Length: 230
Image (cartoon, rainbow, N blue to C red; front, top):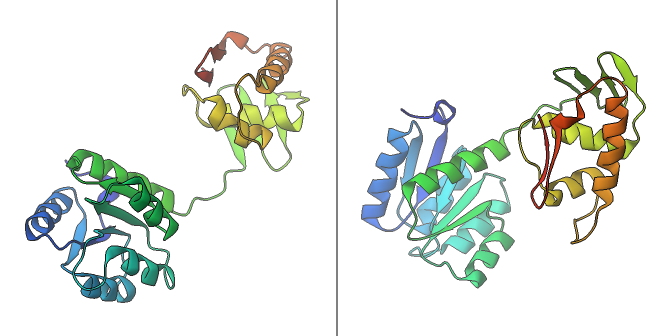
């Protein structure tokens, strides 16, 4: 059954291989997308610049204008998400693709299942998200505007770092969040090996949550993996 998020999404496929064009067109139609097709760089660039598309699948080796130049032309006038799908899978090609403004790069041969997942992921990232200022998870209530948090309606006196840590975990409960994910969100820096700063902040957060009756066994440390709020 087609994913409900795909309906009303119009995609442009710029691909010179006739068999691949047909396969992609059928694949996208069968999953609820509305695909338009271009067989060369010039017509693809024209359609991309004059049409309204939610996402573009772009090959690199195209007759006339190649895919990198199509992407360069597009980025001068639009921010339409672009996934490069190409047999040019070398690191230099991928770097060039991202440098020109690609949102993702998938080297051929690839599975259609992976392509569909990447399309969904890029579409999710491109959707405007309303700012979330308040968060409620079980007995925890957090307000990002006031940087305040309460547990069982008791106000927690958290530092800014402790608040950001609790917010990140409560935003994705049951999920393991690695230190590489949490460090930029909570400490505004990248994680380096043997850095245990976040562990110390988590220890202090546990004590403050425990003081209001929170079961701190639900704040789990998975050694070598990250942290999780149950």
